[in-house]
Length: 146
Image (cartoon, rainbow, N blue to C red; front, side, top):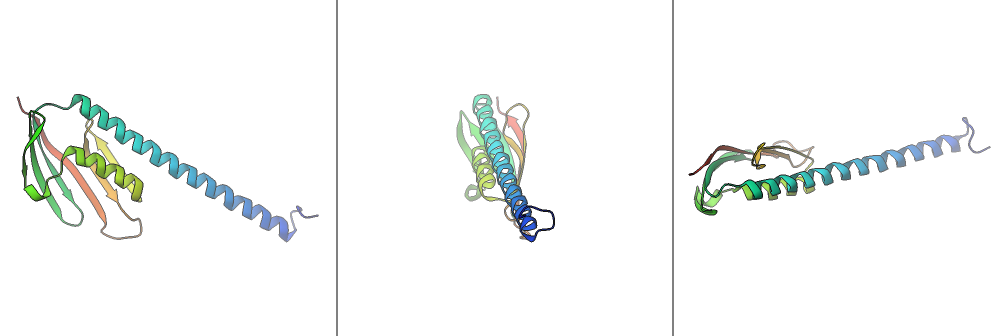
C-alpha cells in the first residue's frame, strides 16, 4: 500500500505536497501584498493630483547611507526653485521611487499625508540580506503659498 503512514513513499509524497502548498501560498501572498501596495501608491497619487495646491514649498530629507536634502518651491504649478539643483527630489518623484521599491525591494514602508496624499515618509530596504542598503525619504516643512 503506497499511502500508508509507514511507507517511505507516503512520507515523501506528503512532504512534497506540503512544500508545493507552502510555495504556492508564499507566492500568492507576495503577489497580493505587492499588488495591493502598488494600487495604494496609485490611489494616494490620485488624491495628491486632485488636492495638490497651486503654490507650495517643502523639504525632502533623504538618504541611502548619506543624508541629503532638497528644498522645493512650486509656484503656479511649476517648479520655481530646487536647492540644491542637482539633487532635487519632487513629490512626484517619491511616487515613482515607491513603485520601483515595491517592484524590486525586499521591504517598503510608506506613510501618507492624511489630506493631500503625498508620501510623508518612505523607507525602502532594497535587499534583506545586505547591510546599509536602506533608503529613507521624508517630506517636511510642507507649506501652502498664498
